[in-house]
Amino acid sequence: MTFYLRYNFFMDSYKFYYPVQIRYGDLDPMWHVNNARFLTIIEAARITYYIQLGLFDGRHFHNLDSIVANVHLSFLAPILLGQTIRVGIRTSRLGNKSMVVDSVIEDQESGKTLATCQTIMVSYNHQTGKSQSIPEKWRQVISAYEGIPPGPEPA
Image (tube, rainbow, N blue to C red):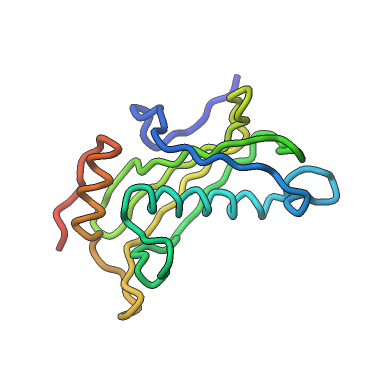
């Protein structure tokens, strides 16, 4: 029997999915997606999630007010060449300066979970080089989209 630790077990669904076609360059000598590519795939989905929510323009990375602080990635099954996958992205918690972003990589045809990931994102001001409170716009948009509490009031 397998048990999976989930941060927010009340939140089982993802509203945002990002489709991915596996390319030859994603593979390692064992003919499955190299473990380092998983984070790149998840990053592309996370950036698209921010763009879709109107939190990032997709052009000026210094305007992207968050950086990765911690990643926990669980590999559950190999991903093969030609396999069509999708990445679910959701924000499950908003703190003062950080938020928890959950990801799931699934086989698009079968729905089988291939990997899960939890990323701690820290709100960051690139001009000052320091962490900051999550911007109110981010807090409002994410809270409304995900149906989660907006978290603590910004300092």
